[in-house]
Amino acid sequence: MNLLPEFLSASAFALWGSPVTWLELVASALALVMVGCNMREIHWGWPLAIVSSLLYVVVFANARIYGDAALQVFFAFVALWGWAQWLRGFRAEGSALRVSRLSPRGTAYALVACAIAWPVVALFLRRFTNTDVPWWDGFVTGLSLVGQFLLGRKFIENWLIWLAVNVVSVGLFIHKGLWLTTALYAVFAVLSVAGFLAWQRRLPKATTKAVPA
Image 1 (spheres, one colour):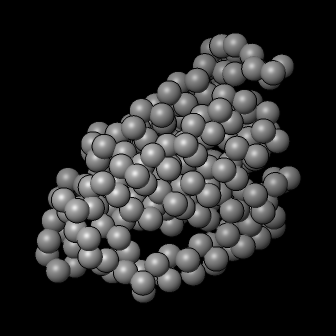
Image 2: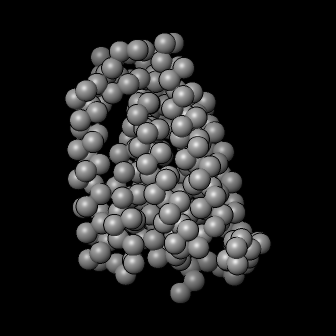
């Protein structure tokens, strides 16, 4: 069943034989601007994330990518937290929230979180939904949860997790025929590298010392 009103589900144009709806077009544009804001530490990227995520809930649900659809709902709520963190957040020792590296312990925690989240989400999707890509959807969903937390706390390693998420997402969206979103996530993959390099240049001005998560 199509979850979109007729005017939103209407095709704006076609890519490689698959229609691109107006909703997918708007959601993609907002998401691209959001990543640009994140790269520059502009806090207005968070409200853009809320709007884009809510639009993508419907896009992904219609494509039966339920993990990603549920993830967008989560993103919309977490974006409020992330926005507050970037505006008023502090480190545990009381210093202002700035771009930092994870400590070795924080890195280990992040890797363990990724290793647990992937199969847990995938098995849930396999058991309770009719998705045909539970493991790929679970990978994207599980690692995105970790990446979003690290982004909200301004840890540079978030960009490495987003790189893995975006590369796998490209294959997932190709499989689903969401060609505009495929192109968007290919751009996201490149921007993940650019974001890492941009934040790396900010480290000497912020802190070169690793801090706990």
